[in-house]
Image (cartoon, rainbow, N blue to C red; front, top):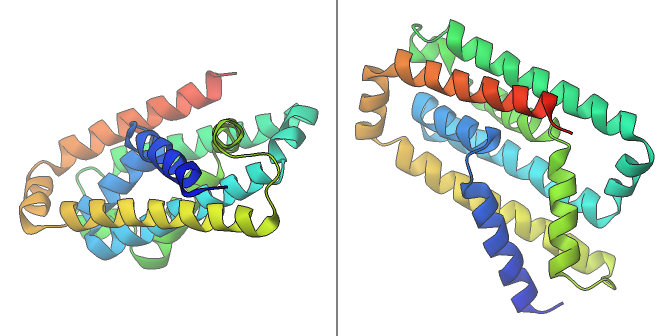
Amino acid sequence: MTWTHLLAFNLTLLAAMAAPGPALLYALRQSIAGGFRTGFATGIGLGLMAACWTGAALLGLEVIFSLFPFAYGAMKLAGALYLMWIAWGLWRDARKTVSDSARPGANAFLGGLLVNLLNPKSVLFAASVLVVIFPADMGLGVKALIVANHFLVEVTVYGLFAALLSTAPARAGYLRAKPVIDRVAAALLGALGLRLLLSR
């Protein structure tokens, strides 16, 4: 493996992170609603689980999903229901104060972890990217480096989002439009959960 392989992987990862999805949407909402610490804790949870999925892909977990489709289906169902549960909570609490509706501290980390844990498509995406970018004969040390690199990129990106979106102007704007923003976020997360539930 050379530095060009890692560069290609990081560019692909950044492009994937920029695409609107449950992880990005959840992180953005958490950062605006709960401030930097909540947004950063959410990002650490999201990044840790995403890096774990990459590690699983490097170790061949996608083969298990191919051999046991029911395992993939069960995780997909759980992930879809979890996203819809988050969406319902956002919709229900749209008019509550931020302190009542945001997930602080350890709960923010756990929420981020669960959002990416219950998305088995992450491991399939990681596997397809890894096969295209990296050579096949990598040792465990190199694979560990790739996983650590993935975690670092995710935490850096979500940390920057949290710092930007937790500024006073961003927070003031969110507080003014909280019911609308939360319900739009709820609708999008619910739609993503439904899409995950119905997709093959």
